[in-house]
Length: 235
Image (cartoon, rainbow, N blue to C red):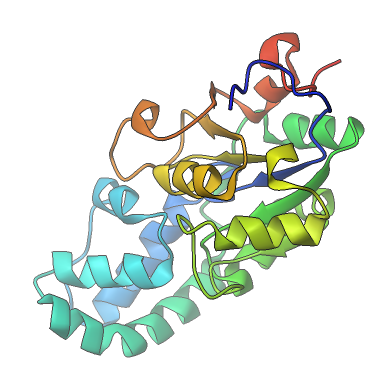
């Protein structure tokens, strides 16, 4: 699918990722994860290390942190339920306090809504974390629906969450733009049949975003409103 060439009809909807796409939440991950590790008697992690672990859901993040701290994979899996309980408590206590909305996000979301697109937020973050964060950052009003990593049986990069979100929005995948920051978003969009735009500033497990499946790269969500963005978004 060629994102640059406008389709016969304009996009009906857009699905927007949260962490690394709309909000820089690395500070929240840093504080909550290291408080959890301290409580468990495990070594702390540097922020750059955490950045490479973010994006595949809280369970993957916690398991990766425990393994990085010296536990074997089986030991980490055994400790995961208790570690998740600690992590959830710490994360909810600071959710949004160490994070910031990226430049261009408010303009981009407002512009997409003004052009008649229906918007959904789809993230691998647990829904109990995602909803309060969107509200705290003044972003919740842009979205008709919000889905987290625990909303469906599988997470991105599986296409199921995108397909279910398209159903909720009432739009076909081919007319639903996915906007994200990582390979997870690109792979999920490709498998679901959605066009995909990826931001250049987010979290992609330490890999260059250019290597992830995409139709367009964005330096800002506001770039979707530029005349050369194509796809019927700007007019």
